[in-house]
Amino acid sequence: MNQRRNLSALTRAAAGLAALAAWWLVYRQLAAVAGWATSSLLGLRRESPLGSAVEFFIYETPKVLMLLVLVVFGVGIVRSYFTPERTRAMLAGRRESAGNVLAALLGVVTPFCSCSAVPLFIGFVTAGVPLGVTFSFLISAPMVNEIALVLLFGLFGWKVAALYLGTGLLIALVAGWIIGRLKLERHVEDWVYANKVDAAAPAEERLDLAARVAAGREAVRDIVGRVWLYVVLGIAVGAGIHGYVPTNAMASIMGRGAWWSVPLAVLIGVPMYSNAAGIIPVVQALLGKGAALGTVLAFMMSVIGLSLPEAIILRKVLKPPLLLVFFSVVAAGIMAVGFLFNWLL
Amino acid sequence: MKKIQILGTGCARCQKLAAVADEAARALGAPYELEKVTDLKQIMGFKVMSMPAIVVDGQVKLSGRVPTLEEARRLIG
Image (cartoon, rainbow over all chains, first blue to last red; front, side, top):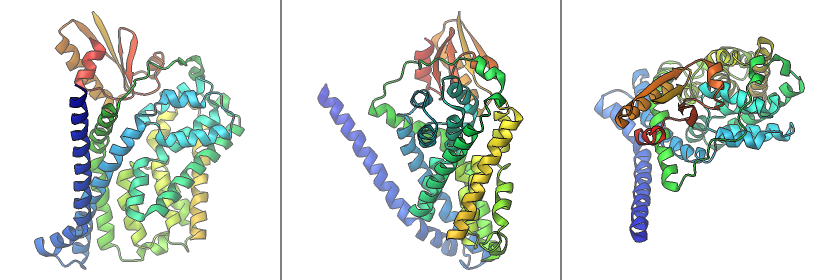
C-alpha cells in the first residue's frame, strides 16, 4: 500500500518536472517565434510601426501569460501556509515599529483580495492589532503584489523587482507607523469596535503536499482566469505605445528632467485601478520610450496600491478624515520614492 | 431543514460560491434553504475575516476561497 502511494507520488513529481521543463523550452523560443510570425507569417516589416507593435504583442502575450501561470502557481502554494487568522494571531498586541515591519512583510504572503479588506480590517482591529500596524498590512497587501514582483523580475531583471519590493515595504511600514502615531482611532467607524471577532480561528486545515499543489492549481484557475483578459489588453496598449509612439517621446513628459512628472503620475494613478498583471506591459512600453524609472514605478504603485474602488470599500469602516489621511500619506510616500529614484538613477 | 448562508458582498467569487453550494446541496437531496448575505454588518456578525464564506446551520464552515464541488458536499452534508 505504501509502495503504491510512493509510486504515485513519484509519478506526480515526474509529471511536475516534465511540465516545468516543457515550460522552459517553450519560453526560450518565444522571441524567435514572434519575430518569425511577424515577418514570415504575416509579412510585415519588423521595423515598421505596425510590425513593431505586432511583434511586441505576439512575443509578450504568451510570455507574460506563461510567467503568470508559473508564478501564481508557486505563490498559491506559499499562500497555503498563511491564512488571515494566522497573520492576525502573529500581529495581535505587537508594539508598533516591530509590528509595522512584520505586518508589511506578512502583507506580501497572506492571501488578500480587495473584497476581504473590510472583514480583515475589522478582524485585526478588534483582536488587538494596533491601528497603524493594521494599516501597514493593508498597504503592503495589495501593492506589494507577487504578480507584480515576478513580472517585474521576468521583464526587467531582479534589480527592478527588488527595488519595487523594498520601496513598497518601506512605504507600507513608514506610512502605517505615521498613521499609528497620529492616534486616529476615533476616526474608525464606531460599529467596527462593536464586533468582537473570535480570537480562536476556525479549525486550521492541515494540508499535505498534494493539497498544497491543488491549492496552487486552484489559484491559477482562479487568478489567471480572472486576470488574463486585462493582461492581453494591457499588452495590446503596450504594443501600440511600442510601435507608434516615437522613441523618447515620453522623455519630455515622463523623463527625468520633468520634475512634475512624479506628482502627475501619482495623481493620475491613484483613482485608477488595474491589477498588477495588466499594468506591467504598459510600464514596459513607457520605460522603453524614455520615461524615467522613478516616475513609472510611482505610477505603477499608485495604480495598484490605491484606487477609487478601494476608497469606496474602506469608507465603510473609516471616517472621511482617516480615509483621507491614509490615501495622502501613502501617495506622499509613493511620490517620495519616485523622486528618490529619478534623482539616484 | 439545512440552512445554508453565503456571505459575500457581490464579487465574482461570492457568486461562484453560491452556485457551487447550491449544486452541492441539491446533489445531497435533503431539503435546504440557501440565503445570500450581502449586508456587511450582518456578515461581520459571523466573525469571518475573508470573503466569500459559507455558513451551514449557523456555523462558519469555510472562508476565503471557493471550495470544489466535493468539498462543498462534505461541508454541507
